[in-house]
Length: 123
Image (cartoon, rainbow, N blue to C red; front, side):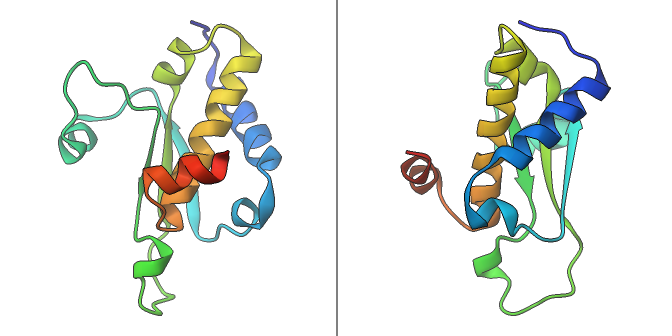
């Protein structure tokens, strides 16, 4: 477990985002990437999470394949959860990698990919 302040967490998030490979990561549009300490009760209920389940990140929005040509939409949102990510990390390097992995996963959902396809592409 590592403890970081909000400024450092935000900087690590920006560095992780910039390090993601490929056009998919560079072509995201109209997405707010934010962070919170932990998922709120509404998010936990929405995902039907048990008390013993951990969530590192969450994509909320309409995946690109389901937009049916609509372009005027509210921004989608990716939320990174600072405390679970920090608790799963033993040092800054691992925290940055955990943030990067979580961002990639949530960006995959933006493109409409399921968990299996995201893991396959991550290789």
